[in-house]
Amino acid sequence: MKTKENIFIIKGRLIDGCHDTCIEKGAVAVEGERIVYAGEERGCPLSGYPVYEAENGTIMPGMIDCHAHLSGEESQNRQGGSAYDSLLAAAHDIGILVDAGITGVRDMSRFGPALKRAVGAGILRGPKIMPGGRVISVTAGHVDTDTEMSVEEVNAKSLIGYLADGKEGCLKAVRTQFREGAQFIKICATGGVSSSVDNPNDIQYSEEELQVMIEEAARRNSYVAAHCTGLAGTKQAIRAGVHSVEHGVNLDQECVDMMKEKDITLVSTCHIPLGFSKMTSLPADMVERGMACGRAIRESYRLARKAGVRLAMGTDFSNSRNTPYAHIGKELEGICECGYTPMEAIQAATRNGAYLMNTAGQTGTLEEGRLADIILVQGNPLEDIRVLGDAENILHVWIDGKRQK
Image 1 (tube, rainbow, N blue to C red):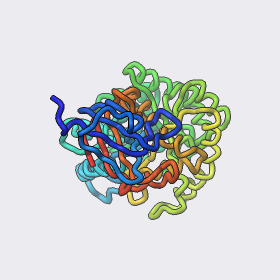
Image 2: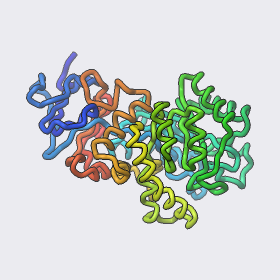
Image 3: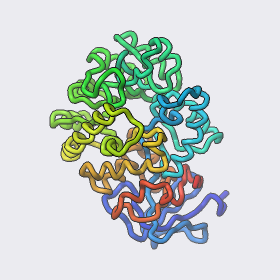
Image 4: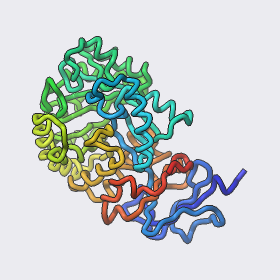
């Protein structure tokens, strides 16, 4: 039965995620969980229902963060708190994501499966979550930060990482993540900026180990996302057939040509490396490594854009003091700093994110028949992309047609 409660209209400047131009006087009509109209306001077939609009307001698809850590702040900085404390913090934090305009997130932490179930059951207010489980790394690799613990203890207790070596160990690690509720697999192909026992240019896995993990994920109708900062390890991961390159700090022409040929998505995390010089309470060596990544990333992304590599927005945010979820949209500023247009950045945060979330055709664009994951923004992000970097500018958020803000 149709009622005024489940049918409404949103009016304003319309960025639908499909086209490279906006409609200045647009409208989106929603019935239940689906969009029934998106286009010129004058063509909207519905009237007499509740209307949401704002002066200089912009309607766009809800944003999707394809690289987040729902770990209850940085798990390495819990200052003695238990995993229960972190889970409670994560349960709170996902509501901040919604307020910031995030309607979908690809998570890389232990809590993702539980948070997904809680959101789906209506217990928690949060975005749609695609959990990746814990990040798989070699011993003495990127996520091996608790070196005072045994490998067995790390694998039992870590909220972020899972250590695996050799083909059998890698196979077991992938199956363990699926057992715990993962829907895709995140691995470390190289070292990283925040590592304690490696550096960003280290190659973490052999080709044989990578192949075992990629093939096992494929058997589950899933895929592997690869943390990539060093050039050699990135090339090895691309050749092996990962589905997405996370960070992609150091790319050359060979990398981007292979990514385009293999239809591999680049997942941005621009804001953090570009802003390392302004971050607080970080070790000096980490800042130095991070700033080096910031110097490299602009040219890497310029090459990727020129080659036509698909870009999806990620952030690497964890709601720490340096990466607050309320400003998660600042990643789009970083994408633009790396040479993309505001419209391209928005498409990376919407349509292309839906591709990696395996929801293309359902979310990521505002079209008739799509699920109504929509945000109404104060301001024009095509003129000033910075408006998306402050949750206060996100006036309303709908997920599956239900208003969350």
